[in-house]
Length: 288
Image (cartoon, rainbow, N blue to C red; front, side, top):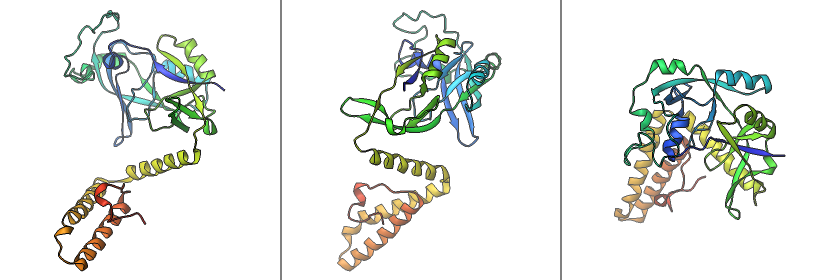
């Protein structure tokens, strides 16, 4: 079974070129909206979002969405809110040059191609509706130290036409051979593919436990309110201050009482949100 990694068209000028092509995508958790900021009037028919902490999506134009839905079932499309669309007609630039036409100074980020300019509603409307194709998370990826590369774990290899995995690195978007052929046939100039590597981690159970723990933390994080975080930091700070001052106590009895209070505080911290072991907690706290 062949699995492939979906990649955006290769652009010159490093991150600057990538931002021109893909813009900036993010998910607004408060409003539960998928949002983009990008240049116009040019927009690829189909492209993947940037590599960052966000779960990656594929951004498509409306007719592309309809074409995919005619050929594949059960894909999850969500309309994208065009948060900021700026006028920058770059597609006819000479891509062979060492620098872009308006290459920003070295102390500026590539994103400032977009963030420094004003939203243009006319060009935003001209892009039409955009949608995010959201891959399901299925299976695990791991880094093979021997081969120095990321691999898909064979034991959890997905049979879906498009998916992402549990991974400790930047997320790739994986597609089946069927979906790869469809995309290559219809959109040969926007994306390309690399063959994914498959493997078997030395300790699969340990790998699975690690990702299960991360999923629990993520679920806990999403439920935390601002008040929860405020209380968590307050209790943690109080415990740390008590630890820093414990050597000033003169009797062992006083130190033992202080240790009991410290452990109580750290247990309260851990109950609100899991506390990782840190150097200053050694000898004062352990997870029950």
